[in-house]
Image: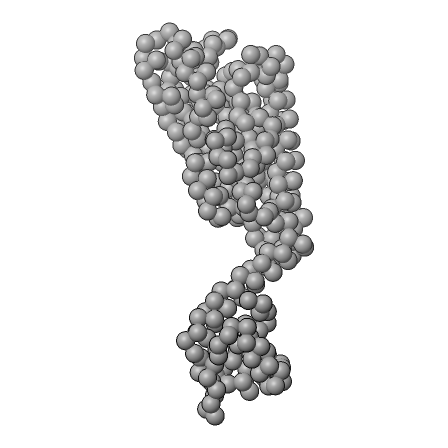
Length: 325
């Protein structure tokens, strides 16, 4: 039907006020102009929307259905207008970003700090969790985008993944750990102790880790779960490592404050041990200008962190460590 939204708005005003005179005043229209608009809508519908009387108007059965649908259409139009406004100017609105564990938190913090300075009228909501817990929120439209280990999303055709640079990982332990007594440590030796992970180990890393575990000298090493503990709190993981003989891995930039303060020891950095990252979103959902701007800040922040991680690996273990196969 070739009706206009303003005609639906006029009819809803008449229904709300119960007569044409008061509706016309509320709409800043003449009563005759409002009457013509409603009559035009009734001609398009092919039936009366109102029954007119000296006491006012009452809504017909078909009119009730037209007005119910009309409210939904006007609400949708208002939402489209708001979204378009945000896309064009970034004046107000909100942005919801999912953040996986580990170094993605640091990149998200850096990006958010820069974004808020550039776009002070946009509210940013950061949700940090396992990427598997964030995925349903992304698919359900509760997140505008997600920054996380991208290996999980290769089998998700409805998602679009922008790959980012991988970050090297460093195996670390507490000071005084038995492994720190040796000048050099081979990776299979690590599995004599419980391995703890910040988030679930991606499939691309799990296979080579299990191979290394199978080469561990002690029989008990080969029986341990891989990993023994999974958690989504960096501080909790660090407390576990500090209070036991457990080993864990993290990006060097994450470890840097604790290593430089002597609270943790960076043990080794196999060249193949790294985490791929990506920015993930639904292609079916139009990215607002706020989301696009935030993505650019994420790219810059992530690239800067990746460069810092490579530099730290070179500093702690020598230039050959990061490129070792």
